Length: 93
Image (cartoon, rainbow, N blue to C red):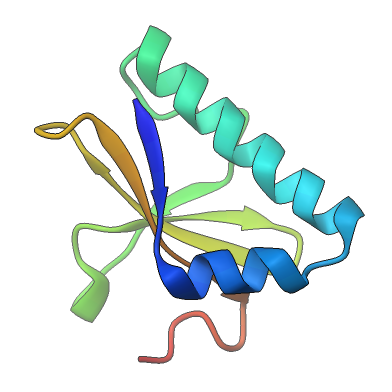
């Protein structure tokens, strides 16, 4: 599976300090590995929750105060990272 980032997610990751960026990228790696090998979400390793409302169809991973909003697209074989931001701002459209 490929990981595809939206422009806002890329921008946020570029401005993060290296230690936080490494934590977020580690979570991406765990998610990708589990989806490729087990074909399921790894709930014991990641704090994943399916979203409701306008973001139905997306899920979120919690990394401290940072939230990663993503969608698994099985038809194209990719994990689309819709947004990465601090929890107070990530759900705003």
